[in-house]
Image 1 (cartoon, rainbow, N blue to C red):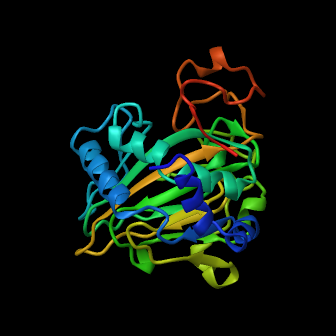
Image 2: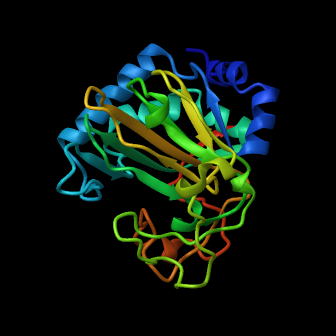
Amino acid sequence: MPATDPTRRAQAVATPEVIQAFARDGAVRLPGLLNADEVALLRGGIDANIAAPSPRAKVASRPDDPGFFIEDFCCWQDNEAYRRVITESPLAAAAGLLMHSRQVRLYHDHMLTKEPGTRQRTPWHQDQPYYNVEGRQNVSFWIPVDPVRRHSTLEFVAGSHLGPWLMPRTFMDSQAKWFPEGSLADLPDIEAARERFPIIGWPVAPGDVIAFHMLSLHASGGVDGDTRRRVFSVRMLGDDATHAPRAWVTSPPFPGLAARLPAGAPMEDALFPLLWRA
C-alpha cells in the first residue's frame, strides 16, 4: 500500500463539506472510511480482547441486565489488530483533516461491546472532562464492526462541543468522582425533553466511522435481542493538545505520566505516538 494511500482515502470521505459539518455539529458520519479487510482485522482484535480482557476492563451493565456490556481501555500495545488499524488505516489522516491539525497523536483506545439483549444505556455525557487533556483539537472515532440500528447508535446534541464543560459523573450511581461537586454545571435532562435538543445520529454499517469532538454531548441505547454491538473507539489529539494533570484518577488513568509531563506540556510521550503529519 503506498504511503500516501491512507491520506487519499481519508480525503475522499472527509470532504470539505464533512469537515465543515464537524466544525458546526461536533459529530459526523464517515461512510466506508474503513475497508472490509480493516473491519475484519478489527473484529478479530475485539474478539481477542473480549476473550482476554486487560486489568483495566470493566463490566458496565447491571447484574440483572439480560445482556452484558463490557469495556476495555488502552490495549493497543498488546493487541496487534488494534495497533495496525490505528497506524495503517485512514483514521489518523481523517483526524488531521477534521481537526485542521498539522499532526495527529494517539490518545487512547476503548473497546465497548454490548451483547444481544443488553438494556443498559450509555447516559448522556461529554468525554473530555474525564480526561487529562486540554485543547480544542481532538477527535474520537466510534467504529462498530456489526451493523447498528438507529435506536442503538451513538447520538449527539449538535453544537454541544462548543461548550461549556459539564459535570462528569459515574454512569452507574451518578457520583462526582472527578471535578468537585458544584464546580461545573450539571447536564440537562435530555431524555425528558428530547424534542428541545438538536439530536443527531445515524444507523451504521461495518466500515462506517462516526467522528466526534470530545466535548460533544453523546449517549447510546441498548441493543435488541438479535443484535450484538462490538465497537472499537480511538481518540486522537491535534496540535494544541496539552497535558492537564488532575488531582484525581482520570478515566482512563495514565499512572506515572505526571512525573514525565508537566502541566501544559505537549502530549509528547511514548504512550501517545505520532500517527500522521500533514
